Image (cartoon, rainbow, N blue to C red; front, side, top):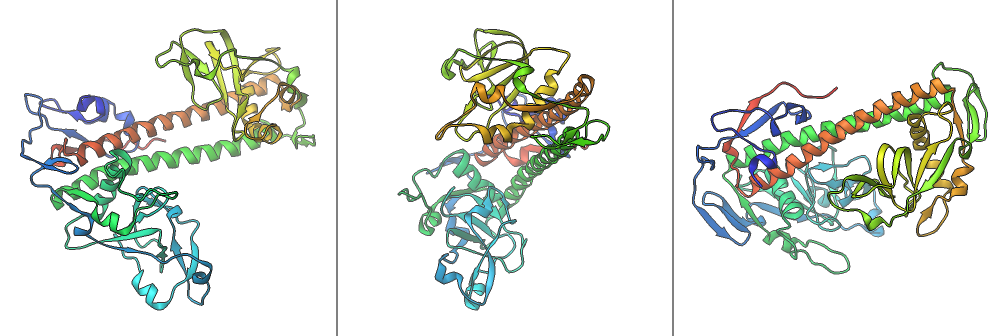
Length: 458
């Protein structure tokens, strides 16, 4: 796969300022990067390589142990006896540490003596590495919480001798543990996988010169900030849709008075009916393993993902509702055209087009998913029977209002999908850059930052 196919644009004599040649996919990147390629198509940086236990690296990179660049220390053991005491302090657990970020909304507390507080005090730019759980997962500490300490299932790494840039090492460990799997077998794998202090200390790292480390960290952090921006937009839009749905399904389009029903308050002008009076139910005929890799037609199963198949059984507009799921997390999809379906996927078609629209039906069933989860049957796998769906009580507005509500909510869904697509593009770009930069297949000095217009989406 070429650098262009992976998402890094070679420039030669013609300069491009967008990843993949499309500025719309930058998803919030203020600066993009291009790679200087010489006339023969090879990187303009020609250099000698050294062989190491983790691969070949440029001769100016140093491959050494983690403890050659960091002091390592584990935190305090959590136990009932250790919790009791007058000096209660917040502390970090593995559940607070994710790749390149900390989740600090749920901090536990425990007693730490004055000596323990002094020994376990965190400083800005300390790394926190998971000893258990998702071993190796690493985040940077930036003094987010005053007096916060850490438990013994976390290693604290503190840079020494200015040999390593802490943010670069977060990305190095992300690459080594999660992408390249360089350290498979380095942890102690028993019934509970863990990464002991001695094992962590001896892990090899490839460190470029410090200025290059900082540039690599800057490039990857730029993409990460764009990813985080997209995630915030998606989450905010999802919350806004929930609020909009609640308002529309309880007050309608005109803030009309409500009436009490068995499914809660609904607008006065809406009818309360059983779903079976509005729609027809069919199911597919195929096993879930009937999907093929490059099929022609959509194949709907009980998965959130849509698969593909080479033949179709339906040619219509329909709502696809998964009929079973281990956790009763069902999916609702709207499709028009040729498709096929799994034998436990409901294909739902409308009986009278003047009663309800497909867009409204899709949104109504989406809003009913929690209720469907509650009424589903089964133990290890939850099921929605035909009887449960036929007798499901729903509220429907006058036909014209339903069309408007369905279109409004569908536009919000399209906006969410647009940002999810941008997010996926950025995540793929990040992993490509992570691989290219950490293996020195692309040197940071060959990535030329170029100013591009702000692409923060509205």
